Length: 159
Image (cartoon, rainbow, N blue to C red; front, side):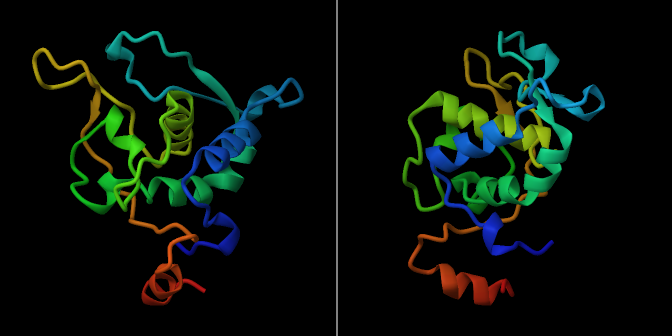
């Protein structure tokens, strides 16, 4: 899968919120073009709403969503187990947001584009955080603002 430069967004609140808003279904979206998404499995018993997206817009922006998810620290390190709170951190260890709405928007986009599995209840007793057990399809990506971005593009054959 080849990224285009327009897909290579920096993982930040503005980019995530804009992408989320763009992909939402509107009153003009034909009913056969709706995708309803949640980032929790049904057995989590959490009152998180299901969000209606426009399928065509999700398909158009799928690589941009995948690129943003690829900047998560867990994708660059231990990719087998991830908690909800792990998503606050980029690959360089910085906190890309403290706004749960921005984080959840990224999770909704990831689940709606099938780049990210849904979160399930924690496997640890007395542990509130939800986890997802696999993120095998995501490959590490790098922010276009990173000083090593051009080198990373060359090493990964991205033009």
